[in-house]
Length: 66
Image 1 (spheres, rainbow, N blue to C red):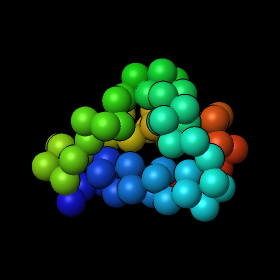
Image 2: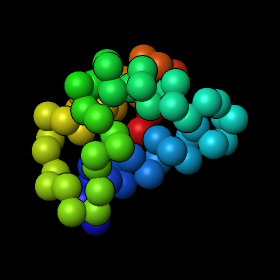
Image 3: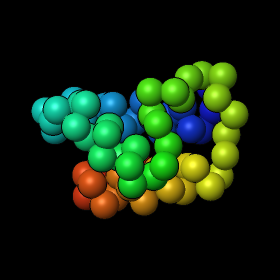
C-alpha cells in the first residue's frame, strides 16, 4: 500500500471518529483536492502533488491534519 491509499484510510477513520456523513465529506474533499477518493485503491501509485492537495483539503474541510 502506498501513502495515498494510507491517507484515504486515515480520512475514512477521521470521518467515522467524528461521526460525519461519509458521502458529504468525501465529496467536499474531492472537490477541494481534485482527487476522487473512491478511485484510490492499494495499487494507486503515490503522487506527492495529490497527497499534498488531499492534506490541504482535509485541513480545510475537517480542520485536522493528516
